[in-house]
Image (cartoon, rainbow, N blue to C red; front, side, top):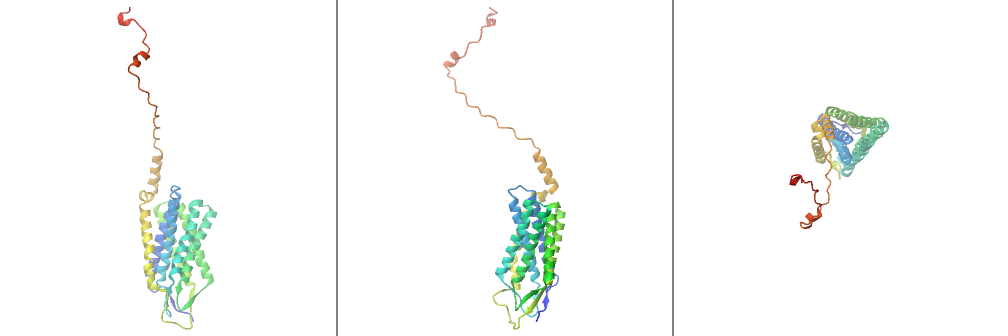
Length: 296
């Protein structure tokens, strides 16, 4: 017997909120990735790590906000907390592999494709590990073609987003690419959910014991949301974003045209003081010109 699934138990509220979180995480992560390409080498790991954590936190928050609207009529739904947190870690680490590849190896076709595959697999891996954390009086079954379609959407979306992050400059272009990435990531999620069916157990209990109910997922989202707000604040005060890319590059060019500072003056060793008694005797007498006596 299969259960009756409703993926939009709260109407359009959960899909819209999930999409906004996917856009926020994508915008912050892509901005950090683009910033790392044009920054000093000592700051590159920090920007790339911040971008990886932003994208991973954004898609994880998107997933579980959307899952708050997942409802099975015949059985309550709960979540295994350790596996839920593991899905967040997988998202950050696997997405980070792709982001660091682009940050350090450039955007050649081979590197970009490899990075897109890693980033897309990180998005898909987070989704299906998060789905495995669900606990109910039954088990999930998947349609394999639809699952493969969702993974393909994740890989294509991640590749396009990484390409846009390092080739399209400007705040508006970054915002547009993050909105496209939000559509792709959210679409991947609901494509994966379309592959799901729930086969119920023969005997149904009144509750799912030992797991957090779906209503307790909301407090778990507070941490990633706070992180995204802090990351957004850091990026918002970045000089390249505050001044604008053109003005920032012009300012750097002007500073590079400044004349170099004068070289330091050489420090000569101090002359020893002369003896006041021996000084007149040691100096040679000036030649006698005779002019002081009227020419005699």
